Figure (tube, one colour):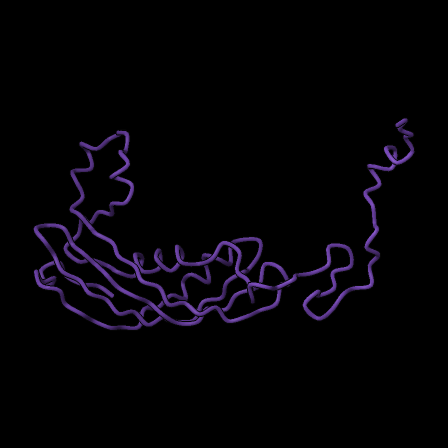
Length: 178
């Protein structure tokens, strides 16, 4: 979705739209593990306005994203319902910026330099920030057995509980006087 800067009012304006995010599938496909699968679009409700030359955006996106559990590797549907907000300020003259040190306050800023604001990359960024680092199908997911690979959510595996580390075998032969 693109919004011309001249169309951004001083009083808050609400809009709802469907934002395409399937491009994220290409981004995440470059990794070694395909943890997330994105639908063609997510529903976005957005309130935007300007104050001076600063542009304010508050919104919410919702939808379902396919994910693989990081413990048991099963596919599941991850419900996304997140709020977000960001502020865009005019980009200062880039030649004058050069190699300068950023202050703590500068880290949360986003800049605009065109007459039209393209919300797509900003919303995709918010979706990526909302993704869990380790998606779980359930909080109590027991995962897979580290020895035989059995799904521990379905029941106990047949592995022996007393499997010891062979690197420690030399220490079991030591005799300690008490």
